[in-house]
Image 1 (cartoon, rainbow, N blue to C red):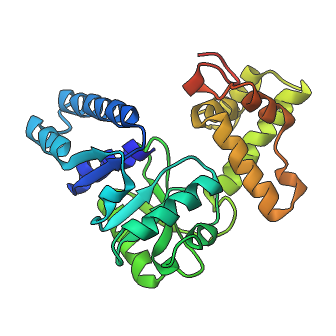
Image 2 (image 1 turned 30 degrees about the vertical axis):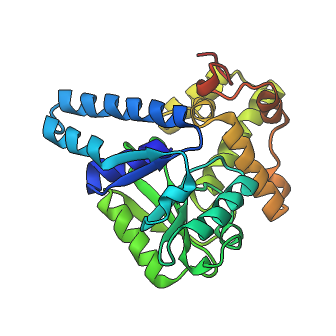
Image 3 (image 1 turned 135 degrees about the vertical axis):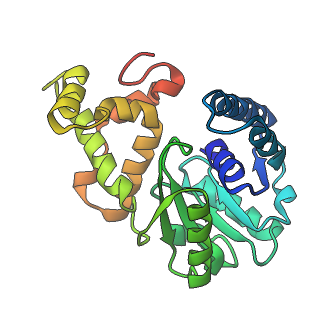
Length: 270
């Protein structure tokens, strides 16, 4: 997700971007993938060679959070884990300048909880991009309890400049997109677990019967079963409602390391 956000920011808004990951190998892979995207767009005459060249020049990389000390806007896109995210925001609070806006790309975790790890909760906001970022048009913007109106408007302005349509959502577990999507996916996994239908028949029913572009189990594999499980746990733990209980089979797949397309095996084999 981080790469997609960096790519769109540089390619569409033409703003300089610093892509940060503690693993420099990951950033190098990210740059290679970004180059493939640019080459593809040039081949399709969507952009010129000069445009692609400038995009590449706008993106730099680092493996140190301290190198973000002078940035105006940070968008964190780490794993969907509160402990990891709060640790990152605690460090960002120390290294970033006072007026930097700190956004998180969390897909379900409370913005208010993440903001509490900093001393400037008024400048922390949720900016939930959809995957893949270069293709999907929506960004959910989620103000925390203390987020200022100025920060909200600056975030909306940036997302709009990136070519995105924005919705503003209250800081509730799962926000809107995953509050609706994840229980749907979880129910599909429960149907598979019960043996009432095969994975193929579940997906085909939803694709051809309800005009969904992708079946729920294929979509789960694409998102990552670990991400789906993490979001369901957030919904279940933070609402206390049993209707959000994660499927036992979903937990088993994650325990087995069958995370979906990214590992070559999930609900389906790739």
